[in-house]
Length: 338
Image 1 (cartoon, one colour):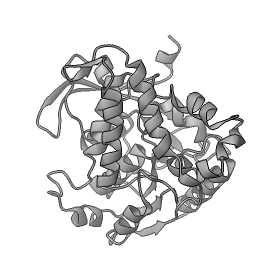
Image 2 (cartoon, rainbow, N blue to C red):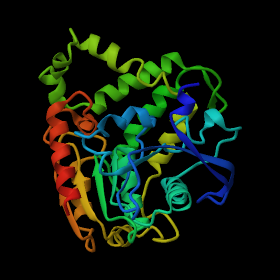
Image 3 (cartoon, rainbow, N blue to C red):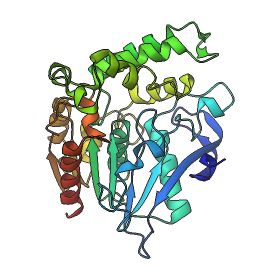
């Protein structure tokens, strides 16, 4: 029961999706931190990443952290498909194909209808959250003042798509996957998925230099077993597939507003943009952000500051990594000062 009291629910009603399908009684779970100022101008939106729920990433919301709730009103909207917001695990089948555009549309309604918010000081996101930050900046350019894209991109690159194909293949090879969905927990599939993730999430240097020893692991196998084998077992497997679908189809320009014109979509952005990839990230390559940087022609400012880390993709979510935490904290402080 305690978990049910930990967050609130925005009842969006029947929502017409980007596909044209109608999602009945769509729900968006969210949690807030801090107080909304009388002028409603101290808002930070912090969308969740792949498979994460708000409590997985709220560690950086603290007075001495990256996002300060004593100064800002921080809202974490749980991405559709994460098990708290509308997801296969809590919605009658069949579950429709969703997009980031669908997610941002409902998040926008949450901010405007429930809180009367018309300006967002910062949209901060890591990984899938970073992709949402990009979508927010492009779709609501007069509303978003700043956006921090941490280990994310404006669209899913082909290499990233292939990685996700390997994840899907590992997970769905489990015999629990039948007729297009999981009918029970895929125990072997979860482990296989974790082993695939382990190779992609961290860098070559992380394994070469045995950085995992700094966290107290006694061997490489010890690290893999205790860190990755059960990482995704806490989530419903059908939810994971739904979010992989959102990720793979991510493209800020793939909507009626931009008609697939990527340059036009990025040119719509007016915010101060901070692109902060992990220097050794294999999901969201620095070169993708380099390409995007030149297309942000109307942004108030746009900088590319890679996180100098061997922690790969996880450099953007450095829960127990003080060095990367300090780097991100300093970058966000500078961004909020603009």
